[in-house]
Amino acid sequence: MPVFAGSELTCLRGDRLVFTGLEFRIAPGGVLVLLGPNGSGKSSLLRVMAGLLKPLRGTLGWDGVGIAEDPDLHRSRVQYVGHLDAVKPVLTAVENLAFWAALAGAADPAGNARAALDRLGVPHIAGVPGRYLSAGQKRRLNLARLLAAPATLWLLDEPTVALDRAAIALFEGLIAEHRARGGMVVLSTHTDIATPGGEELHLDDFTPYADDEEAGDEEYEEEGAAP
Amino acid sequence: MSRFLRLVARDLRLALRQGSDATIAVMFFVLCVVLFPFGVGPEPNILARIAAGVIWVAALLASLLSLERLFQTDYEDGSLELLSLSSLPLEATVLAKTLAHWLVTGVPLIVAAPLLAVLLNMDSEGFGVLVLTLTLGTPILSLIGAIGAALTLGARRGGVLLSLLILPLYIPVLIFGAGAIDAAINGLTPRPHLLLLAGILAAALPLAPWAGAAALRQAVE
Image 1 (cartoon, each protein chain N blue to C red):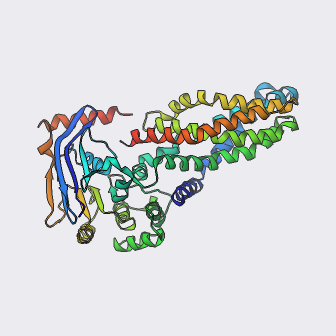
Image 2 (cartoon, helix red, strand yellow; image 1 turned 90 degrees about the vertical axis):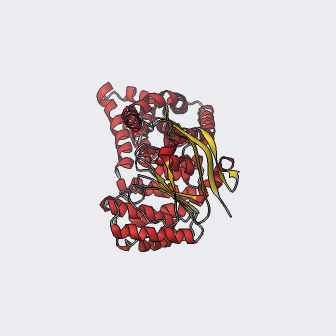
Image 3 (cartoon, rainbow over the protein chains, first blue to last red; image 1 turned 180 degrees about the vertical axis):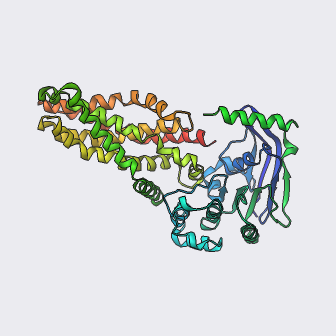
């Protein structure tokens, strides 16, 4: 049984230590909920898990094999949903989705895309160009990618932003189904998402210093100065 | 391979639906060349003598125009993160996007160039070589430009920085491109110039995607 685990993870952003000595472990069917105040490194940890960001120290392993040894293999196991929706304004919802499905190697990308939109309760937006979609519809389209291009490990960065109650309930159902199939989910959230039996990881436990206000200011400055 | 073509097809579709990128480069190219007779006077001899250089310089500037947006939109809407997480190697992603950029902006320049050569009263001996040099040269411009676009990604006033970074690197292409046409017009063989251009293209084809991908990895982090 595959296990995704990280040990001794340390992440540095700019010259600020975000978290250090972080450990986690997810078994098939497991959920890891990342909790913590703004700036505590939830997004950074998800990006580290995806392989977008290299940890300063520490290792990530899949079944005991370091993911750095075969990053291509790791990428094929991961589906990442970040803050940005990656929706092209001039492509229709189906075209947007089918492209990602095709890139993941789906045999029938357009079919997959339509089925995924049906599943997320928005079949009517299939032919609508991205620029006419509402924030919630874009988010659903982005979540539909999880179904159109299946992967074992879902990394979700505040997936329920802009979603209505009905959509959140639907999404909880999708997570439950994914877990029943032996999939793994890591998600960060500020709202309540029902994840029965999910483990919680409090990121502020791993923050090197407790002065969150100062840390938040620093990040803001960094973003302001970055061109 | 099919994933590579999927990405090319998507970028072409985006460019054609937005429409502006494809036409702006070629319109700029034509206008830029048309300005010269107004500036240096309508003397046919002078225009004929400078035609090769003028067309090539205009082509360099035109290909710079849309380079800034090569990775910019994907970077801003988060697509670049997803592309770098896909099973397509990032080097192939850079090559696919560069190919799409060349098809949209480079090819129209090649088509428009002979018309502008007529306008500048260029010697007809040079027409074939002009098309040949642009066919070899414009892909190099897109490839070198892709490195610059990747490096300046996320930078403030990236477009200006990109021009300063890339234009000096275009000089060899300009020398051999214009040189080949002059050689043909003066009854010499353009072969050495063309071989050198082909050599630069052969070097840029593997090196530019590699360097561009390295820069993109930094940008995505």
